Amino acid sequence: MKAQDKEEIVFCILWDIIKKKKGQAELSDIWAEYLSKIHEIKEAYGIDLGEVNWQEILNKFPKKRKRYKLPEVLAEPVSPEEMIKNLKIRRVEITPEMELELLRDENVKLRKEKFEYEKQIREMEFLKKSADDFLRVWGHSSEDILRSLQNIEEYICKVPKDEVPIYFEFLIAEAFSCIYQLPLYTQEIAQQEAVMNQVMWRGKTDLTGRPISWAPGGGPDVIVNAFGYHVLVESTLTTGNIQWTREFAPIVRHLREYIDYKELEKSDVYMLFVVKEIADDTFASLVDQAKKGFNTIPLTVDLLEHIVETAFYLPFIPHAEVRSLLNAFQEKLATSYTIDEYVGIVKEEVLHWEKNILKDHEDLYLALNAYNIIERSKRKFITVDDLFEVLNQEEKVGRFYDLIERILRKETIVRCLLYYGLAQSQRFAGDIILRAVPWNEFRSRMFKILGAFSKMRA
Image 1 (cartoon, rainbow, N blue to C red):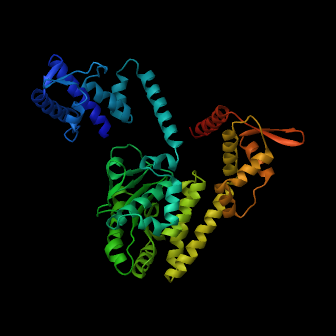
Image 2 (cartoon, one colour):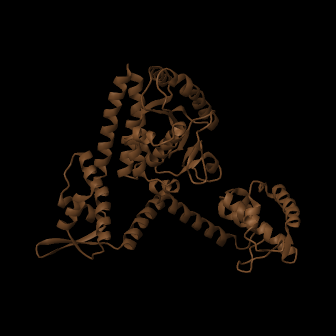
């Protein structure tokens, strides 16, 4: 249960105690009643409220002559038991036990339909989010992460020397949140969130989101639950002979333990070792593991940078596409004889992969950016010439076309907007005029397409 939920329960407990004391009570009386109540709740519901700063919450109640009173400006909350029940309904998925309980309710059908509908809405809102939405929680964006990887030495220099390993770990975790477009949680938060697909960093942050402690031993730094497979990530700035013995050797054992514990196939779990430079012992050991059928892949920061760059331009890359790249890395590792040979081959592979994916999605990328410009202009109509000029001035669009080695053309802009139904066109005085389709109309059409696919799967 989230800390915020526990604080809501504590507030209800304190209100209930003061109310029973005829609207006012001294601290000693409140304390005795509070201890008894949280013990009762722990026994009945398994919820531990001992870690909540109850005195801070008590300060929300006005105090006069050593007595705390009920605040007149706040509405009376429900009882602690009712609050717990509401939170459980809000947070918990329907279980077989809950279904049996619902069947005893005369309005079971209506309640269940409402619950399922609200669940679908929550899922839809979650799936609409991009890496920028998830990283905003940590005060960053996908562009911040990309720039940090591209200028890794500068990034390291800005961090206090004794905190560099912690910040590097967290940066790599954020990079995988970008790649997979999944929420990033610390281990503590991940255990409270009922999200199956996520990126979990096993380190710790303070209340402001600043990383303060690296991932402990006994497991990888980062665990990615992607769609259809798992990725374990270990990262280090260590170089030379100690890179393998100190950092990576124990992780191979954890990889095997993870596969056994989760009852997974070896082919469905990838172990990535992210470094600035691959040491000789690390390379030799990972080649040996690859020949045994394990997906153990060394990955340099500059290779990771290109994968993040692809996700920066296309925040909807299928996880299967990332997996195909990892499989290619694994194949090259098993057949490479030297580090230089491996790094050279996989760099060509990732550049080829990036270029092809961006090419395949050029129409959608261009349509979305063109539509965004039309909407930003606040004009009902815009000429193709004006739109072409603004797109050419967009640095991000220019970099995209440099990567795919193509030239932006006016006819391509029109074709993409019309193909995706984002705009309507007409000729006026010899020019092609574009009008953006209302957002609600486009959104409605996309949901209908999604609904059609859902019915096909039913």
